Amino acid sequence: MVESIARVRHIRVTAQKARRVIELIRGKQAHEALAILKFAPQGASEPVYKLVASAIANARVKADSTNSFLDERDLYVSRVFVDEGTTLKRFQPRAQGRAFRINKRTSHITVVLATPDEAEAAAATSKKASN
Image 1 (cartoon, helix red, strand yellow):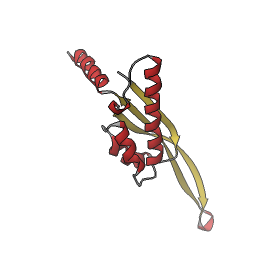
Image 2 (cartoon, one colour):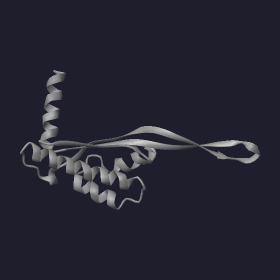
Image 3 (cartoon, helix red, strand yellow):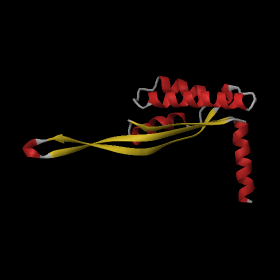
Image 4 (tube, one colour):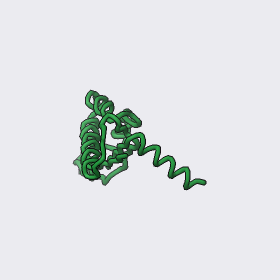
């Protein structure tokens, strides 16, 4: 009955490249997602790996604070998404006095881990709301 959220903001990776990585772990068990990210060749896999590990730690702390039992093997990635962050604009000199703009893009990544019973409870409440 634990749902934990971890966010990282203004990470220096483009949203498009981060979305390629999060598609690998969407819906997977948390420890399986860590194993996938550990060996993924993409550069964005390292910050996403740290984020999933942080979400697992957040779930552990949340369970301890509510005195509830948490089996970390039950956690799975219920939601994960990437939003575009601010773009740092830099200029590079070019020929004949021109300037060339370089966009250094950032992104905001959010990972939500949940236990299966938490997902069932969320589905039941949404079903009640729709009726």
